[in-house]
Image (cartoon, rainbow, N blue to C red; front, top):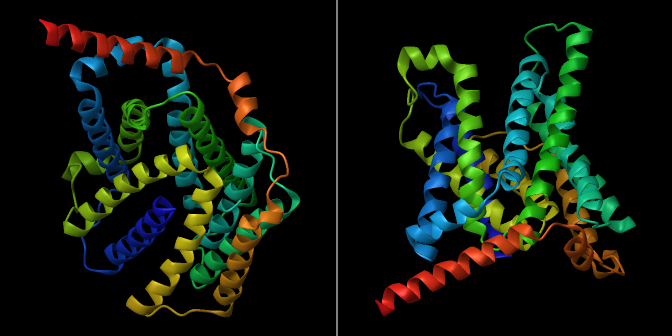
Length: 344
């Protein structure tokens, strides 16, 4: 559970740092460039860990062992995250923040549904209740935080409905991509760092393309690092660190565990924000905090656990094992090469 505590701390620090960067006299930075640099940092870290584990030759052997099918599998979550980010940009441009935040919390239910479909992990009735409760509680917190903000522009009903649909689709893609990554990590890739390296090598291109499309004019005028200071670099490094922690949670725990950690972080961020930035804690927040604690207790209670969990044996039978076989073969080849080198 240490990784869960780290994720909560990372999310709280990230929320407070972003809020500080917006309230202070900081030059405006490009969020899209933060995503690109964070992906680059994660890619460099994963590459360094792979080199430490296998050496350059071992890493090259594994990369060569990857087929087109493997790269397509890796590209699926990278492309899903890219589409999700673009949909969220569109939604935020045409919806008020409160509506967006409430609709965005459907990712909890989407993740539970995709986990049941893709991982054969069927939550019990009590766990479904906990998922719905946590969705409602987070929505209450977001409404409480954003209730003072009003929509500056009057949108046509058609555009408003389209933006709402885009938000729901983005939440569904978020749940799908997270569960897909969880499945790949647990059943197809033995090395967490190698998977992160492959995912990063695909994500960097999609993030870069998104940055160019959204902020090409700003980049041409002032460059990619415009508005960067110590606080901005902290945000970027913290986001990269959070991505690495999330991958550990997806491999060794579950996507729903990650979402519950994020829900706790939202509550803690609101409390810290009230202390640091003098924001007001409302009755909505107190109610949401109570619901969150109850939903967590319900979700982890022994009576809420499914009586029979066939996840492990089902996925091993159904999922292709070619990834694991290839990686094991590459590892064996690397060991053999090292032995021959030492004998020589």
